[in-house]
Image 1: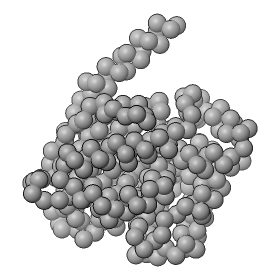
Image 2: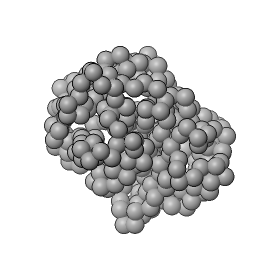
Image 3: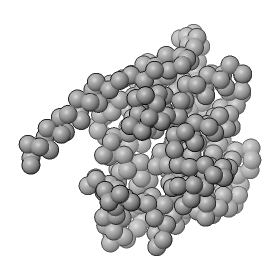
Image 4: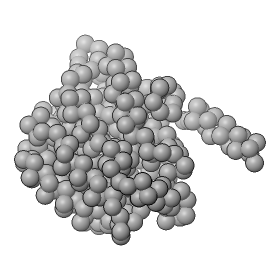
Length: 307
């Protein structure tokens, strides 16, 4: 059994190392293979540069999670992708957003849930509740956390203290808060929100699509949303210098989110957020998929990166 596990792990590592570089419809994609970190497992980082990128100009930076799902459906596990390069290029050509580069951070595979689950609200839960959450299964019976402990604080340290300094040194960026953004969907939406709350001096805006408020895969008798909302009540950044975008559909997994998003929206109002700095949208009939997020990606990008 140990030999079998070792061989599977080796094959998985080789697949990551030789993963096909996504094709983009415009601009240039540069891969930094197995980016090393003191905080999380090594992972690919794909950097998209727009047409005409030049070191003589400075660019805003959009950090996006689940980087292997962003650019090319022919290279993804489900043959679906955000097609970020296509959406961003159209917005740039029409002059709707400022110049930017996109940094696609690959998820860690089996560590995805533990990397992306907001750690501080999780740790407010009683130990027996934490254990119950760790023991939960997906609808297909597979483990949610794959035996890994929640470590999103380390994931954010990787982003802020290792990856961002590298990006700002290797590329021509505007490295200030007003030009640094983070975005993701589902668990990637959660970690994007957690990032701007934990590092409000680093990130000026966050786009949280189909935010996975339940944390696991059921809503009944689930204490996680309450923990998230209590955390937000104490840690939401000031609206004056931040923009927050939320959305969800109403089909498949997204059908779990509306009651929780309503509570979050009420909290946003209480914290002084108005339409200038906060947008929350519902897309009836849309499901939990890259195709759905592709269709509406222009909305959060225009909201966060408008000139």
